[in-house]
Image (tube, rainbow, N blue to C red; front, side, top):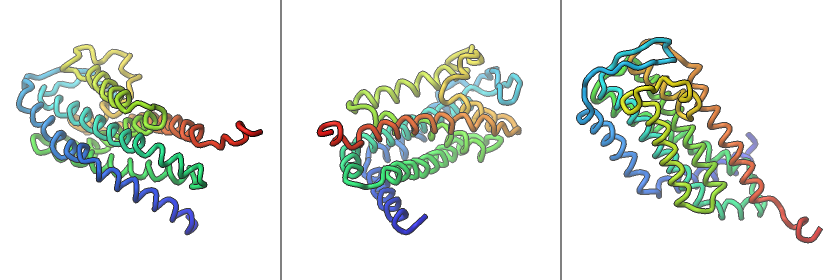
Length: 258
C-alpha cells in the first residue's frame, strides 16, 4: 500500500479505535455482560440432557442443557455487543465521515478502517467469550468455538455498520440489532425451541455460527464450510453500507447547478 494510502487508512483506523475505546457502555458490556450471561446460563439452566439435530455433523446430538445454554448465550452476547458497538460508532461518526468524504478524504479508506476495527473488536470479544465458556466446561474444540463466535460477531458487526450508514434514528438501530439477535439465536436454541431443526432456521444470520459453535462444543469434526455463511452475510451488509455511504456523500453540486 503506498505511503499516502497507508496514512489515510492508519489515521482513520486510529480514530475508529479511539471511538470504540470511548464507548464505555460497550466496554462494560464486554467485560461484565459476557461472563455474567454465561455464568447465569451455567447455574440457572437445567443440566438435564437435550437431544437436537446438528446439521453440521449430520447427526442427532445429546448434550447437557446448561452447556448448550453457554453456547447460545455466548453467541447471543457477542453478536449483540459487537453489533451495538459498530452501529454506535458508525452512527455517531456519520456526519463527520460525510464531511471528510465530501472534502476529499478517500471513501475506501474510511470504510476499510471501520472494517479493520470491526475485525479487531470481533476477535477480542470472541476470544474473551470463549475463555469465559471454558471456565465452566471444556468444549471439544475451543479454537473452533472462537472462530464460530467471531463469525457471528462479524455478521452482526456488518449489520451495525449497515444500519449506522442507513438509519437516522439511533433508537431504531439499537432495537433492530437487539430484536434480530434475540429472534435469531432464540429460534435456533434447542432449549427454547424444541423444533430448532426446522429447515427455516437455515436462513437466519447466525445459523452457520451456531452450527459451528455447537459442533465445537460436542463433536470433533471441522464443519469449516459453515463458517463461510457468516462472512457472506457480513459482505452483503458491508456492500449495502458502502452504497448508502456513497449516496450520502456523493457530490450534489451537479444536481443543484447542472
